[in-house]
Image (cartoon, rainbow, N blue to C red; front, side, top):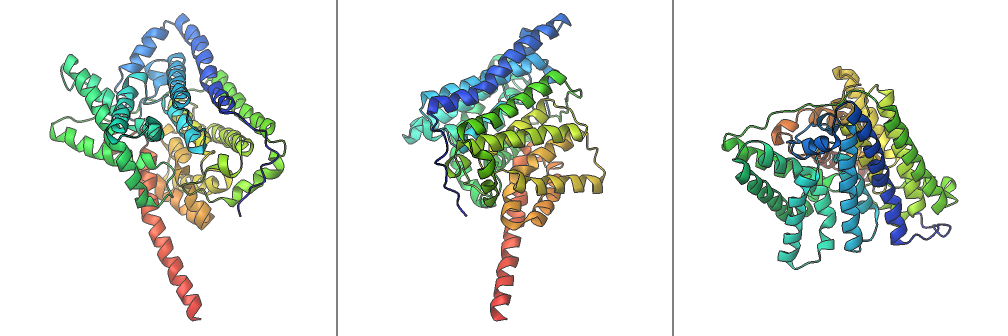
Length: 433
């Protein structure tokens, strides 16, 4: 069923859509400055915090709340958010579902892994790729935004003490440029492996590239040490702000489409497999409403599990919000979450542990499996996802921030051909009977 009745929706200009997205970095900047000043009273300088974030190796899991303080982490995310909004406006990009997903994913991962220093060389590489292929830069921006999943390799080479300081800067920039040059052609081929059932396709691609880079570094006797730097408290002001922002998205849904409650159920007819752009299929009103609903559900889940709304979990929450515009809705996400929780019970995981919680949140990358094959398949996929994601980071050494996207691609690539084969076999049986 395809839902096309969006005549009741208020028409939004490109500038209005950008303004709606800009509310998040604006709020983050205000919160970051205020909270940074408060932290300054305790001796945590906002400037020193930002410098610490920019010069950190940033491998998984490096929570910027710990590295530079909450205020600096929010300012870092805000600056990166404004930078990407500038690019979208400058290159006159159409604000579609995938672009919204990319924006919120980058915004979220700016709390643990991405900073202004380590993403710029990758954007430069994307620009050079566009020039070399003689195509508009706007054609590669989305892929480059997602490909900053590999930003930690820039920080590791630049600040990890592998090279002398001056040469390290040069090699760090060069590594980022190379990533930007190769990621676009690789991404278009990798989608064939999981056939669109893994929404974080660049995460899977980055996992492959990260594995190659980590292997090269090991051959040069460079070992990337595992990191687990996590903020373990809950800041009530931060939580209130995030709830307010998600309620704002719901309000924008109502403002854009007055019939959003009546029409929202139509979103459940979509399986979520790439490409499922809710902005074009259902309109922006239902899309914003879905983003707000999933945002509230995600942050509530973190709190129910006894976790902390820190850099990594905030990243997972914002990524879910972004992909609520491109494939995710409650019906296809719940089975994956249930599968991870069930596996957590079976294998004895600590539900409040940040590593477990981000596995729960990011498992929704393979929500299309539940959408296409039903909730039982979704639960099984969630269970497999947890077993893979908790063991696969060692392969790429933590330099791929989208570790769950890598694991999700493997789960989809493993499950989907098997399900399809048995479905075909069942159909043949029924035909003979």
